Amino acid sequence: MPKNIFIEADRISDWASFHDTFAEILGFPDFYGRNMDAWIDCMTCLDDADAGMTSTHVTRGDFLVLCISSVGSFKRRCPEVYDALVECSAFVNHRRIDNGEPAILALSFVMTD
Image (cartoon, rainbow, N blue to C red; front, side, top):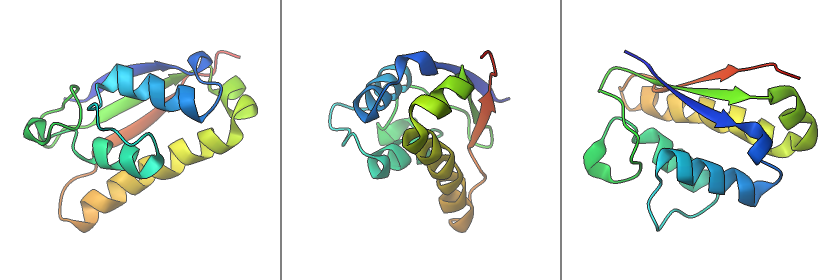
């Protein structure tokens, strides 16, 4: 069964706040590199609690839905960060599929603005 995680995009104003928000909500480790390569590594391991990459997990075969609020203003305010979120989410799934694993990540945009 999918798990929904809500991300308030109003909290994101730049790269630092993007990484702060995701690290806090998903429980990234203290050694999280605060870049998109590190973000991809953490998100790729959502179904592997033993990897220690997140405190949020899904059961193998399930997936996580990132429910992004106020996505319109987020995209206008931080277009580079928004594009990276979309692109890197797709890459997480691509990496897993290339390794014979199921996709693990979905995005849901809440258009409240």
